[in-house]
Image 1 (cartoon, rainbow, N blue to C red):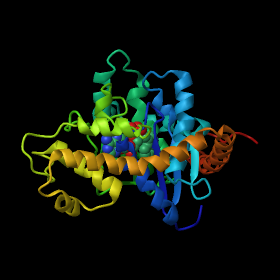
Image 2 (spheres, rainbow, N blue to C red; image 1 turned 30 degrees about the vertical axis):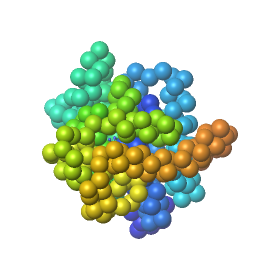
Image 3 (tube, rainbow, N blue to C red; image 1 turned 90 degrees about the vertical axis):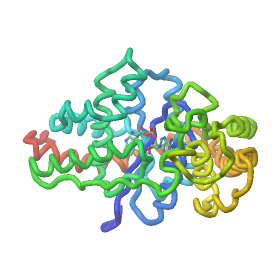
Length: 335
Ligand code: TYM
């Protein structure tokens, strides 16, 4: 880590198939940050088990997600890439932060309320505590900036609050992180219900385009995407959420501005819009998928990347944890 450079931390859960929403809202924006900042990107497997997982699938998804990170352009030479459960400090700091997080504020977390509704048979303590674990992820590395999609903003705000609370209760310890929300495509919505977030866990396959979908699936899903009854192609998230979502996806994958996209599609029909969006997604995903497959087949290499990543991450994380333990009054273990 270089002195004076800003620190970036972010992560994705290895749960199910990563969607183009995850990619546009987070992963894609991380790539360029590697040149400018000290970047730490984590596969957050401990978050995943807050909903029931099949262990063998979680293992596979973890390697697949690391391979996807690298296939999209994250480099283990430039960034620290690691798996959350390899660095025990994440769980350890969570315990301490739990003692300054109030049950009332945790109860108010929108995602906790949503997930409690969706998983009514498994409202476990981990589900409620999930934002505190996320705060630990961020604060352990003294991150300045956390690039995420809109749905994670409230959690980053909690991390800020906990950092400030700890700093004022004890003494300055944590950097108070800022949230970075991308200017385009920060909330990609479901292709079937354009008022809801596109989500990995959506049981309706047609609602979600994953990073692993083939050409035919992508074309089919966009063809079936819900639009609206008039015919005009323009951004209007209130009145035309479906069309706006398709335009956002197009802008996200091509780099075209919203204004330019509106001009490009002026006077065209929804059929053409859907076909062109699908083409832009296919063109962007094909090379990523090829590289992901190649990397995922080389398990020894992925394991080596994770080993180095965990060692580097642990060094930074333990430094913060030691400070925290000292401040709260834990006596140091004799060495
Ligand atoms: P997760 O795994 O649900 O999502 C990973 C990232 O993808 C973004 N995202 C979206 N962006 C735009 N449109 C969508 N439809 C969409 N769906 C998801 C999310 O905002 C997120 O940035 N708790 C986090 C992971 C996490 C984390 C962290 C992130 C754990 N610790 C520390 C940052 C810092 C989560 O479950 O994201």
